[in-house]
Length: 219
Image: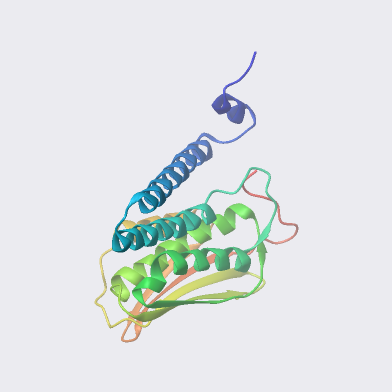
């Protein structure tokens, strides 16, 4: 008896939650591809040079956003440990290209190499991305400014920070974004903390560093 793709993946041991994430990611990437193709087709058909330029720019922007989405996909089942700095670098590059550069926001990664289970890197990547976008939206208000992603590693824990040089802001309430970030980090045994000062906002994600051989948490 043949199995449907969903049944096959379930029998392969993929959890229902990850299966749902994989399905939604697949549909979203298909939608990105469809929209990009439509924009490029419209650009080829229009005889207005200004409209053609605008459509091409829109297609390139969507392509950059698709690259960000692709970088943040859940790791494949059985994927081994990866370097967190390499992973965050690919995420930061995609975010800069798709969203931040056009707003005049400079994003810098201060990297420190450390190999972690793929699932842990993925969750940290999701949390860091949320922090970067929060900094762009709330701290810098999509205006010219700078944001930094820092990394520090010791024998006990890994810390990722996101800071910006936006104007002082009052202590905000705990919104949906902060709840998501805290839950993502708590899911791998860590914690998230925010500090609000006269020189912008600093958010710190601290997670335990695995001891001994690293096993893939996504398997």
